[in-house]
Image (cartoon, rainbow, N blue to C red; front, side, top):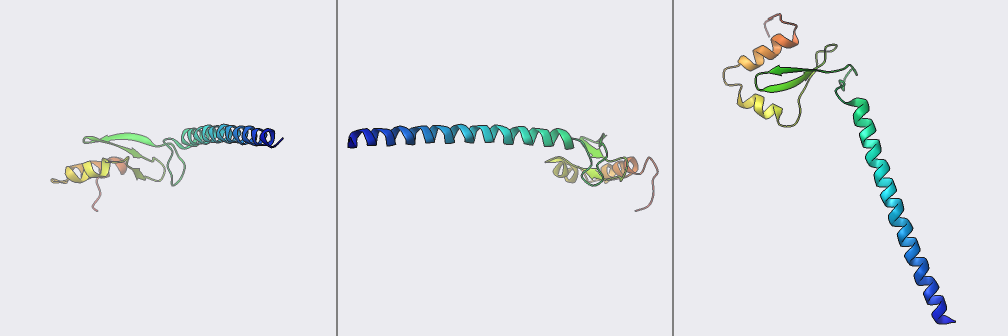
Length: 107
């Protein structure tokens, strides 16, 4: 009788562990699906005003510019590239010209 109870307990524990592992995988898959859904929902939209961002080439860096609020958004590593190439200042002037709609204004 005691051996049968130990077997039942062992089987119950195994089934519980399998169910928990399956639930964890399902939750992870749902979590990944939710991350993808949110990325698709917000991809290339301005975090400030929600408008669609416009990718613009400035020197060797592609920046994302919001046509509505004129926000400029950089991907990882792009700021470092900008800083490295800023020796003459022409990069910043061309970006400011682009952001301001082609009009050069004093800073």
